[in-house]
Amino acid sequence: MRIRYFIGSDRLRLALAVFACMAAAMAVFAQVRKTPTNYRSITVITEPDSAVWIDGVRYGVTDDGGRLAITTVSPGVRSIRVRANGFSEVTKSLPAASRGDVVIKLTKTTDEAELAFQSAESMTTVDRQKAIAEYERAIKLRPKYPEAYLGLTRMFSETGDLEKAVKAIRTAKRLKPGYGEASAVEGRLLKDSGEEDKAIVTFKRAITESKGFQPEAYTGLGLLYKDRAENAGGSGDYDQETANYEESAKYFAIAVKQLAGAPDGIVVYQLLGLIYERQKKFQEAIALYEEFLRVFPDVSEAGAVASFIVQIKKQMAEPK
Image 1 (cartoon, rainbow, N blue to C red):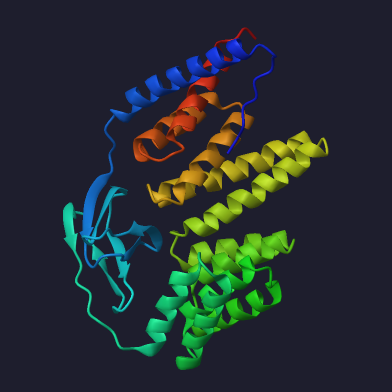
Image 2: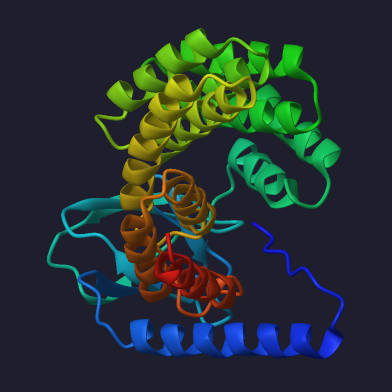
C-alpha cells in the first residue's frame, strides 16, 4: 500500500487537509459504489466452513449457515470447486446462466490421505511446520498425490527452504503432466532465485497449460516486469523502465480480469493502478480505481483507493 506524505508543521492545517481529502474520497466512493456492474451474482450453498474456488481462484469460505455470496463472478461457463474438512471435494461445471443460489452437496469421506491433506490445508496460515508434516503424511498415505506436493512446495517456499520446494514441485509436475498451477508456482520459485528468464518461460508455460486462464502466472509476470522497470529506472535506463512498465501493466491487467472480484484481486488492482500512475496514465488509473470500488465496495482498502482518485484528479488539475 502506498503512503502519501503531508509536509508541514501546522497540525491544525494538516488535520483539516486530511479531513478534506477523506471527505472528498468518501464522496467519490459513494458515487462510484452506486454504479451497477456487469458481473453476475451467485450464492453458493453447501456445508459450513467450505472453501470455494472458481476456475482455481479462491473466493472465500462459507459461513456458519453454509452460504457464500459471490457477486463478481465473470460471465461464461466456469468450473466451481468446493472443499470442507471431513468431506470429499467436489468439482462441477458452473453454467453461464447460473444466477442466485448454487447448491453443492458434499459427502463424508473416510479417505485418510484426503483427510490428512485437508488438515494440512487448514494449518497453512496457522502453523507451517504442522502443515508440512500433514502434507508429508498425506503423501505417505498416497504417494501419487500431486496436490499435496504442490501444497508442500508452497510451505517450503514460505519457510525459505527453496531446495526442498524445487524438489517437491518437480515431483508434482511429474505426477501430473500439464499441471498449470504447479508451473505457476515453479515460475515464482525461479523468479525468487534470480533466474528471471527461466521464470518468464515457466510462467508462460503455466498459462498455456491452463488454456489461457492462469491469474497466478499473469501476476507473477507482472511482478517480474515491475521489478525490472524499477531497477532500470534506478540505474537511469528510462527506455527500459518504460518498456518494462508496459509489459507489467499488460500482465496485471489480464490478472485483474481473470481474478474477477476474488480476494486476491485486491492487491493486483492496486499494483496495476500504481503502475498507471507511474506511467502518468491518470485516466486509466482513475477508471481502474473506480472499478475497484464497484467490485470491492466493503473491503478495508476501499477508503484509501477512493482517496487515490481524489489525489489524482487534484494532480491533474494543477497548472503544468
